[in-house]
Length: 300
Image: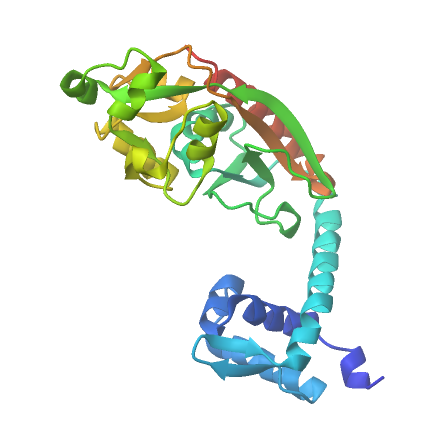
């Protein structure tokens, strides 16, 4: 084996992988937090070490050559190994002081977690908190977050999960909307009203159909996939929408409709890398999150 290949610097392979996955130097540089010229030099250094071009330029960006494409899978394996090493090392940290990074859906981050995190700060001020609102599934094994608050159970290996319970859902509308359009007396009356639904996300439509409603996309007068914006549309009086019962009942602008409608509940899970879960500060925040979320999501 060529000695240069045997001693390849992982940072060069990391740069290559970021470009291959992002499709451009600029996007990859932002992802890695380095300058574009530095990233370009790293990719060229790897090409020189291997004696082969790794990318070709196309109108849609940088596309891996045949050699580059062959490197993607082993480079990903190296990244996963490096992350496991980092997790194992970080998991030996026995200090309570430090930072814990939490990711949650946009809705949870806006409407539920602020008061929960305020409670954590009150009893554990030595721990710094970072909140990442995201409807994407952050990869906990890549340290994109230390703890995730999710509406599903993670099936990743080496991830510890805890089911906190189920979040009751309800049908809500602004009182201003209901005063103008009236209040539906039955579920069958909903199609006669302006409904607020999701756009590309099929969740609401699929749930309604599973409940036996012949729902179609055209039922929704307004459609929006951003959860925070969706809820604000309902609060502003744009129509009838669906949301977490505890959040809706606590809002003086909203009124719950048809409380016995039988909407399915959302499961609530905590997830964290097994190697990090027993770090004192992560274990502390984990328990406080579990306690605070259970209390915050209990319907009034």
